[in-house]
Image 1 (cartoon, one colour):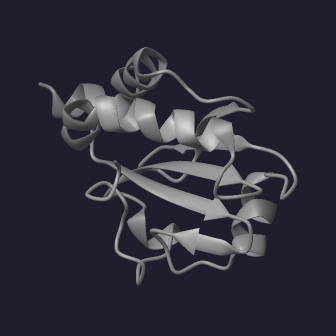
Image 2: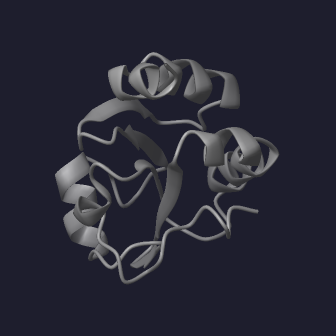
Amino acid sequence: MTASLIAAASTSVAAMQWQKRVLLVSAPQANDPARAEQRRIVAGWKAGAVERDLAVVEIVGDRVLGASDAPAALRQRYGLSSAAFGVVLIGKDGGVKLRQTRPIPAAILEETIDAMPMRRAGKR
């Protein structure tokens, strides 16, 4: 799935700033259907995600996959509930670019990222 897109666990989300865009996926449990759907979407869009410097960080229950941050700290910083699915797209500048309570389709991720100033500048 997103194994190659999941950042090294020793890296914090803040340390990825200016290097990666981050898709922060939060789910209350590992078997959450929305999490599974978001994973399928990213897996099917892997080449596009890699081209756009996208790293995936998941908060699942009380664990973080792909970053060294504490789950509660990430949820608080990005306004995510521990009881419901949520996904946040974070730009290279560290700002929240998109927030959803359901999986984000690849076309929306692509459109949103391609409209970002740093992405447009990089395509020149």
